[in-house]
Structure formats: C-alpha cells, structure tokens
Image 1 (cartoon, rainbow, N blue to C red):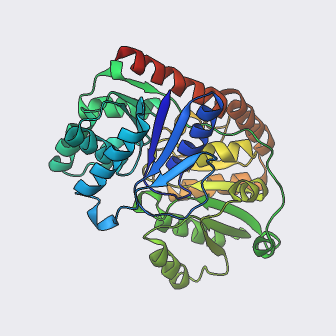
Image 2 (image 1 turned 135 degrees about the horizontal axis):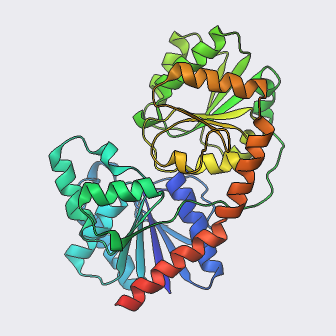
Length: 365
C-alpha cells in the first residue's frame, strides 16, 4: 500500500512527530510512505523515509491554487492509496486539491482536538462542515474528541473511530545537556511542553508559578516550545520578575531526558485533544498535573495515573503541584501511569490499528 502523510511543516509539534513515527512503523510493515509538508520548516523530524516540502508561503494558506495543484502533481506521480491529513491546514489542502484536480486516493483526517472549542462563529462552522464531509474517514485522538466531532459536524459515527496517539517504547537517557545543569541544580524543576499559542495558557501558567513562589516552594520551571506568543510570554516573565525562575528553551530534541529529570509536568491548557506529552511524561515516570480538558481524563485518572484539576482553578493547580513536590503517593501513581502507557500506547500497536483502517478503506473502493 502507498500512503501520503500530510503535515503542516517540519516542526517538533505533537501532530508532526506522531505522523513521522507512525510513518516509520508503516514502512517497517512493508508499506511505501511519503511525508509531505505544506510550509517551510527546518526541524529534524524522526522520520527515516522520503520527505518532500511544498514550501508554500504562509500568506497563501487560505487560498493556494498553485499549492493544491502541486500536491495533485505529487499524488499523480506517487499514486497513493491513502492521503492522511494531520492537523493544521492539511485537511483544507487535501480536500481542495482533490476537488479541483480529481485524484482518487482516499482521504483520512486525523482529528487531534475537541473541535467545538475552536469554532467561534457560524461561517467557520459551515466551512469546516464542508471540508469534513468530503473526507472518507476520521480518526480521533480520544473518544471525547470523536463524540464532539460527530455532534459538531453531524458526522456519520460509522465513518469515525478513536485511535490515540502512541509512543516509541525506547530507552530514555537520563543525561542532561550542559545548558540545563544550572537550573536543575538550583531548585525543584517543573517542565511545560507546548507551542506558544493561546489555548496552551502560558499566562495562566505564569500566575501559577508566581503563586508557587509566594507559597515558599523552591521551584524552577522550563518552558519548552515556540510560537507566536513567545515574545509576549518572555516580556511577561520580566514584568513579573520571574526570569530567575523560568527558562524558555524553544524546541528541543531532548524533551524526554528533561522530563525524566523533572519533578512534574505541568499542563494548564484550556483546550486539548489528547496531548502526546502526557504519555511521554508517564513513560518517563514523571508526575502530571493538568487541567481537566479535552480527552486528558481518558488517561490522567486522579490518584491513579496523575493529578487532574478543574479548568481555571489556579489555586487547586498550585495545591496539586505542592502535593507532588511533597512526594505524597508519587511513586505509586507514576508506576501506575508507566504501566498503563506501556500496555496501551505502544506505537507498534497504534500503527497496526491505522493499517487496518487503511486496508478497509482501500477494499471499499
């Protein structure tokens, strides 16, 4: 079988990293996979196969006839059975390319979010409705996201399923790079891994950090990621006099090593699907404190696999972090989380589930 995995760009974001890992496993299973990115990017993605970038300008993301034609040309050459759209603009790009240029491959959309949280006005709902009703199948990252997708777009339940994100179960290095030794030797380190976008709630996180400091907790925080809000967050750090407490690193390739050494992963997101970083923390036996949003509660179970806090309850979030720092039941909970991930989220098993979906769609043709 021939498969195109369509991604936004070469960036170390959950959707792109998972698409790359999935592509590797599909290749090992004997399929031919082409990774296609829409926009320019320079991250080192964990995909060992062939990758092409359409290098489309960001200013044309809303209407890009030339880009849709270019994708159609690659599809004509590669002749895929499946084109999988993975977040960002990939769904729109795939649908318009197929409508205008008539290629025949099946389109699968990987839905990684609770979509209703992103729809603020009716025209956006109508436009997205138009797109999703022109794909052949939808794979949601959590059951909550699947049910929300069905309800929001009046989509056929029979054309959807839930397949969570997975992990490559490989050894995690405990070694830290030199630029991190100072912060890890100067306090109890918390880590946050997310793009600098509004739904990740960096502003709320800074207020939580400030409350932790005011409570007397000797904490330091590493913010891993990048995005349009990073300059504003860095300025806010200066205004709040937290620059000696918080380190902003940008994207990194050693996230697992950092998490393995951290005291907790903190994730006060306002909108989520099922973030892979939670599974990574569990695999590293790192405690998780997160807001109860999206599909997070499907893996973070209070007093079993992590600490779950009501959305926007910053006082409750601080209390949960303090409980983790005090060590109450931490080892028991992190062991439970680790065994859950190893048992249920192995990427080899996840890739087989995607493969089964592909075969059913191809046979339907």
